[in-house]
Length: 342
Ligand code: R5P
Image (cartoon, rainbow, N blue to C red; front, side, top):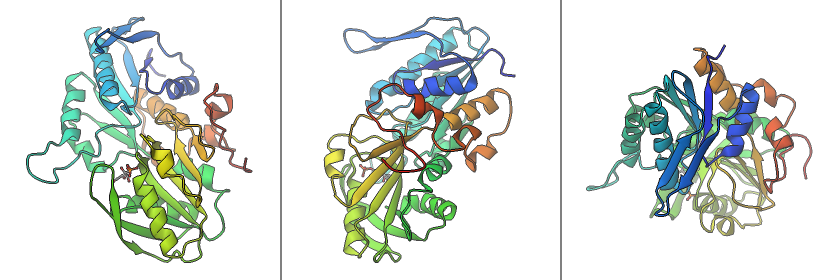
């Protein structure tokens, strides 16, 4: 039994927080999050948290700085209100790509963020497909990195064209591509990319045979869309069929991303609801990670183990769609149906 937990949602992913709470059979606690006239974040908890287990659900997605401050301020409010313990569920962690210095006189912002999270009083962090697993080492508090791969694979399984090759769009995603490929029974190809700026990359090599094959490009996140677009060009140049699916855990789609992704070879783009989608592009499908998040919260609060969640899709995904998407209020998205296409 969970001892009187309080689930508090930030403003970034209220739909996912509601869905996780529904899976847990609890209510999202009332709170006020607003802005002062100068833009500062204003928070008030509208229910006591004294002596209770608090779960904060909030992604530090764009606008990253605003959402990061909101997370820290919500945690501070809980700590000062004598919460017994604060678990932050942050499906998408902003600044995770700032995990190393590429030259001199640069910060490691992911490490700074880890210190801020700890200083705010957060006792444990649960996240999903963290950009690089070693980022966990920046934290002294426990960090559990869940994966959306089984959930996305579950949705993809009946949709993949025969002979599909799973493609990693860069060296950093090879392990994730291998995971997808193993679960889907597909071969793997690797695009080698080099980043030339924050928004631009160039492809230098392609390893693997994609000739006359449909492809599934996977990634942890899609931001500007540049990485995927470069990979599509490289695959087509190598003779891949113009029949490409894209799957990523976090769909940020910043700026002109959908224009960058407007290649006719890209048939579908599948992401999770770790970030609130801000597009109505007809090629976008969303699958919910609410059951995974809910299961992780349940196990964490009851002192159970999360290891099963790294491998299997939670029960409520069985049979197809996440219940969240079936009952979601208007999100301008068509539900992803495991059987049949639109
Ligand atoms: C890079 O290492 C990441 O895994 C993603 O490939 C990248 O961050 C995606 O960004 P964008 O869509 O801007 O290319």
